Amino acid sequence: MVRRSDLPAPMTVAELVQYGPLPGVRLFGEAGRDAEVLDVRIVDRREDLDDLRPHTAVVLTDALARAGWTVEMALRKAWEHAAACVVVPGAAVAAHPPGALADRLGVPLLLIGEDALEGAVRIAAAVSRPDAGRTALLAQAAQRLADAGAHADRVLAALHAVLPATSVALTDPVGGLLTGRRAVLDAADAVRVEVPGPDGRPLAVLVADSRSRTVGWATTVAAVLRLAVAQLTAWSATRRLAEEQLGRSSELLLHRLTGAASSDEEADARTRTEAAALGWALSGPLIAFALRPAAEAGTASEPGPALRALWARHGIGGPLVASEDCWVSWRSAAADKPDAGPEVWLRTAEAQLTSAVSAMAAYLPVAGGVAGPADGPDTLGAALADARAAAAVAAVPGSVVRADRMGPAQLLSALPTDTLRRPAEVVLGPLLHADRDGTLLRTLAVVLDQGAAPSAAAEVLGVHRNTVAARMERVRALGFDPEDPAQRLSLHLACRVLLAES
Image (cartoon, rainbow, N blue to C red; front, side):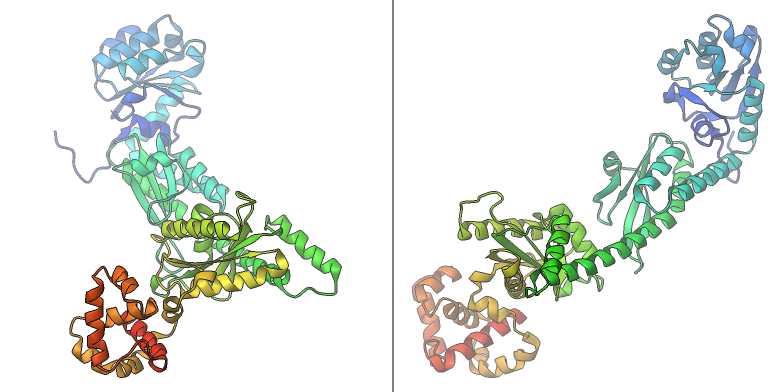
């Protein structure tokens, strides 16, 4: 017989448990929880167990369930006749419920906290109107989510409470776990519901995976997850407001900490106390870091919350505070290697920051700068300024520059290429006309980078020294001499501007 498509899907044993029509229900034999329930049969005599129909919920009366081995017999008869489940008043088998047999046969055994007749009436009502049970679940979910408030962890707990046998997680838009159960991330058929941010783009994703494969259950799960979106959106707004307030207070505190010493020693002491309470490193030597989001990253106007979250996950410790067009951090240089010295501290910090910005690149491309060491708060401001300058010339997202290692190429790369492109084309006009494949331009730029040393330039270009010499002869024939002090700066700047464009 073919079921009409316009009829609601039949109630399942899992839904009887999940939708809550049976108060205080306990389930054994979960392997059969997806069985459909089409009818209800009240059994008060043992001989009636020989006449069961498939997909029937078999409800034993209290008196019959208390008789020796009756529940075990009912489970076996239900298995033989493909009945949906056996329902028993919990008080009748409180001492020794036959859960092991139910598990072995795969026949669900439901122990209910009320009289058998009352339970049978509830089951019959749910079976006759399965959509009413699903609506009741949504109402229960809405109430629990309202009680949870705008808090991500409590929202996830409420979802787990109303969706038994279902695991739920909250992830970021690219799948990183924020809270919830990690096992969900590997599920092939998980239900996903996006949580939109203020700009309409996904802020987070609710992911749910259920052991139940009942027809229509995924739709019900998605409906419950959608009820949680409003609370999670409110949670996000609350967090964003807190982040904004924290960011502004941190900026002000950093300004007071690194500013000129005031005549009010008590105020200075309060500032240091506030900084120490936040876990800020105050004793030198201190290494300064700066992060600068890439202009082409396409992020929102305020990337601070995202940066702070990424720094907490992938960073190398220390606070992250907005400072001009960058975000700065610092930490004690001597924590790991107290006797290593400035060069080792800076080299280690550069490697660690490079690793951090690489890990952050998939979410928010940034460039980094490293500077220091500073002796303490009095010189930390200068070190942070140096780190910001280094981050500004680290033009390529994912790159890190040390303030004490900024070379000519890096300084030139920080100049506004849009403004300088046309003058650069005028300066190098004859060379550009003769240089069809860009070889001469690249060679001239590298030679200038290497202080007009052909051997060093050849190593960088990966060609023979004689090849570089031949190319430079052509460049000189066009009227450009990299060894002429009057030409060197303009040539170097023009080369870098045009190479940055390409």
